[in-house]
Image 1: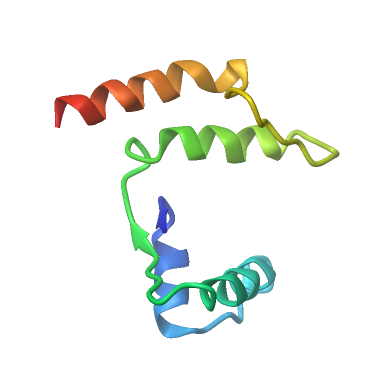
Image 2 (image 1 turned 60 degrees about the vertical axis):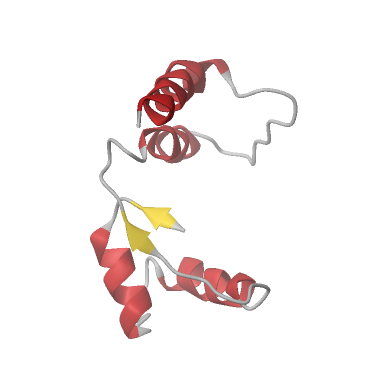
Length: 90
């Protein structure tokens, strides 16, 4: 899993889930990780993680859970297209 928060990477690596704000998320990830033969959390730049960052930013404004099944939401399309174009250029 790629994240743009080095602190999360460090907490995961040390299995120190003492920060109360992120502990529930890390514990949930730990449970889900058991479903995989191998699981790693690694750091990437915010630019490389732009679509995920936009989703997190948008989610902070919601009072309810939201799910998109057929196509990405409009606020995300530009970032997804730029991310896709960048992947082709690599």
